[in-house]
Image 1 (cartoon, helix red, strand yellow):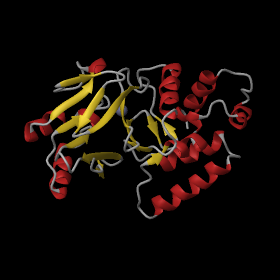
Image 2 (cartoon, rainbow, N blue to C red; image 1 turned 120 degrees about the vertical axis):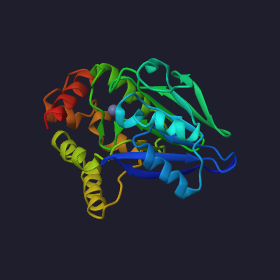
Image 3 (cartoon, rainbow, N blue to C red; image 1 turned 45 degrees about the vertical axis):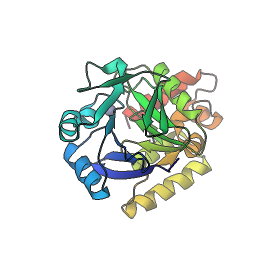
Length: 256
Ligand SMILES: [Zn+2]
């Protein structure tokens, strides 16, 4: 099996567009459609033809370019069955546990409600890469627009079970502000301190902080660590349930 190629680029300010290409079959998938023109230009620059669109959720900066990109390329749109009414042009509905194929490469669908009620992620086990939309960010997680803290905590817990070396492609460049917040709830975490310093340097050089890895996030991302004694002490929630600690971290981030 040939190795997948990934092209990552900025869209709409702080969104990332991603194209994944399988040289063997010639297939190319666009993860979401933040900006149809930009995505087309990137595909052209790489010499790739977009054959599929894989949507994570219905927000306009993720599915807003679906119709234009489909009209221009004839790409097949894969999206969550949970949100078929809010995502334009879905040809192939998928739900938790379903497999989506790009050539011989398989991606497993993981249902991750919380940011929206129909959000899904795509995990490619052979390549060990995950496209997580607005569910998990480097040092953060998506806002709870439609779900409860308990739902989001369950969703993030499932992503945390992926192999540590999994490269995580988040849909926004939010890492530097996430790091500033993370340090307020987990100030004594040496891994987090080092991560925050690295992110500051990367951003100063104009570099992307995405992708991250599951292992790095498990060691530093407070939204994956509500069970951590240091965080609980900082929040004065020593005996609380994980989901209550998670909810408190999310509440503080919303007001940060
Ligand atoms: Zn979103």
